[in-house]
Length: 275
Image (cartoon, rainbow, N blue to C red; front, side, top):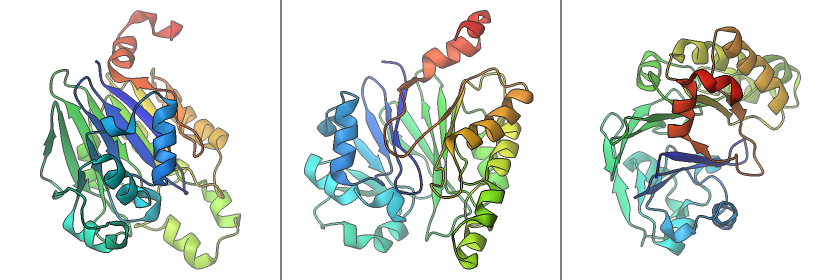
């Protein structure tokens, strides 16, 4: 099987992404309830018990709420940093299979090499990840919860073939929105979340000839919309010359499966206009 990615759901209320090959299925974050993760996997014809590993990026509940339940129910090993595991110990029952990783040190999961790297976010030990399939060389970058795109973040995400990138809020909607000023300052700060404008800037910097698709993720329910994110970020990328598709992940249902190998072949093909 080629490399496929399923965004099961993404937004302020929960985030979970599945990456699969012919030999392994890796769940990145379990920010939906255990039951909801099961339902969404079943909706795309993936038995939950076939998930090989659960990789947790940080302790915030919109990335962890279902991790313990899902891991225990389906005997799925959890990959997590020690600090993150300590900070969300209440979600763990003690009998899960836990594997600890460190930012900057690769994790080998079958044909997939996971590269975790530190991000600027207000969590105890926050990471984002890239996942590279050794057999094909295809690389998926997953970077949500970015207060600011640091040099190390930009370096790690370079040459991704599929980029899942935070587009959390619109600056004006955040400024005029219902949150207290302290929350607005946190979201817009260096350890908060990436705005549409900032996502567009980072996306343009990460563009290259083999970039086969961009998914905008982690949209705020209160301070953004799918249409606005698509117009702001997607429009900026297309204006800069992006030939690949742009999608917006939503909270309440999975995004259609993304076959990275097929997308890569399409972006390299003169028939892209038919895509």
